[in-house]
Amino acid sequence: MADVTTDAPISATEGRLGRFQGWIPYLGLALSAALSLALGPGGTGYRVPVLVLSVIAAGWCWSMEVDQAESERRRVKAVVYYTGLLALMAVLVLLSPFFGFFGFVGYLKVSVLPRRLWWPGITVTAALMAVCQLGGVQNLRGGLIGIYCGLVVVNVVIAGAVTYQAIEEDQRSRQRARYIDELAEANRRLRETMAENAGLHAQLVTQAREAGVLDERQRMAGEIHDTIAQGLTGIVRQLEAAERFDADPERRLHHVATARQLARESLAEARRSVQALRPGPLADAQLPDAVQDLAERWERSSGVAAGVTVTGTAFPLPPALEVVLFRAAQEGLANIAKHARASRVGLTLSYTHEVVLLDVLDDGVGFEPPDETASGQSYGLTAMRQRLLQVGGSLAIESAPGEGTALSISVPALRVPGAGGLLENAP
Image (cartoon, rainbow, N blue to C red; front, side, top):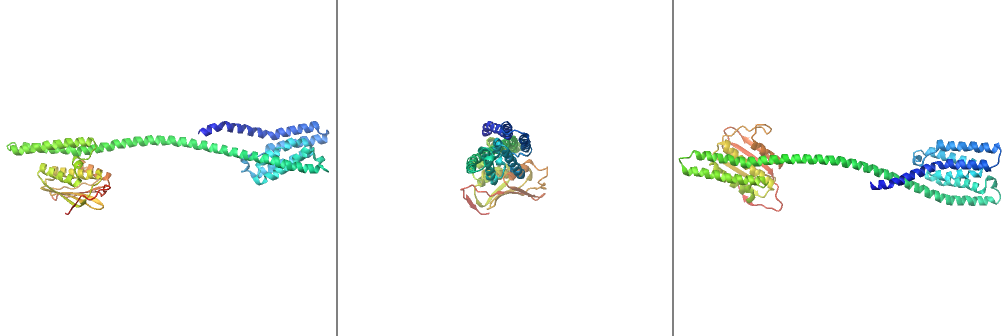
């Protein structure tokens, strides 16, 4: 952009020079005609042809002139214009050598011709200028013919070199002007694009912020459901059980102690959730051990037998996958405690090359599984599906009234780089 601003005065100067050059043929023609009429032979037979041919030459230049910028598009007209200009120059030079001031225009206008015609045009113009320098066509005789030929050669060499250099410089100047125009246009488009990108960037930032807020709300809702809500549910259940055993202090104290332990665990989980950490059991153990510990604590609080089986070679998963599987086991056990009235529960972790499966089975009352898109699903199942979708996992529910329930959760078997198998268990 700075280059465009710096070259602007140069372009203005070139424009003024171009306009001045446009008037040179008319100034040269007027000077030539004035000198011819003032210093040439008198008489109507001389003056009338000079005036008439001068007017015709001026009209030809005015009506037929082709600018160099458009000469490439109008080649035929450019050749006709220059040929007619040479013819008028030749006739006028034959009338008076003073028309050499007009004949010089032949050098200036040769650039409108195709490059292959430059030297012929320069040579003809040099021959006419040599006639003027010799004093007129009447002097072309005797020994002056040799001088005339020498003048033609000198004019061709000197004027040709100067003309070629001027034409090349003019073309370079025009090319620079085109480059400057193209650069200015490119800068304009760049500014427009940057303005559009700035608007799009602001829009994307706003959308990303809104999406981040929504994701964080969903995360916190899931964490609250999986920790505080379930912990409070367990505490209420233990306190209700304690009320039923007022006559049995030992069992009453057992339920109160369990409620107290659940309260402490829920408080710790709440703090970890706020800090966006992994679930407490996963912070200190691998997934199979964390699930085993979860099942044992759930068995103590619910009084329902729960067993855990690990098949395949267990290996560490990325934290996001382990959290999803652990939360799924937590949600499954919580639903069994609330609804299933089961006598036995089994959890199976299966490690394969492609997926890691978690199956949660119970022998409870069962239910009619809702459609995945139905609005009547519990928040826990909905949150579980959302978490699994975020990591490329899936949830399948098999149940029927009176036949128990089976939850099957699968996630991709993505190994943590550098981690090997942890243990080898058979079913």
